Image (cartoon, rainbow, N blue to C red; front, side, top):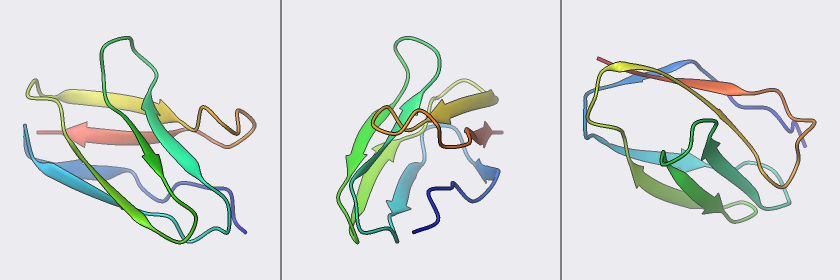
Amino acid sequence: MSFAFNGPLTVSPGAQVTVVNKDSVMHTVTADSTGGFDVSVPAGGTATFTAPTAPGSYSFHCSIHPSMKHGTLIVK
């Protein structure tokens, strides 16, 4: 288990983002700012969410494992 996000990831506004979890435990991709994206990704599985429509840099974390390093989603 790596308990780490790869990235940063750059996507277009409103793009569908698919997250692949290569670990053997569930994680979340949860935006640090309120009202952002939040998706649960099952162990060894995938999940999809819609990127924000406003360009910018969005930090995110795993709400289950707060010790994981944060990731960054760049929308442009």
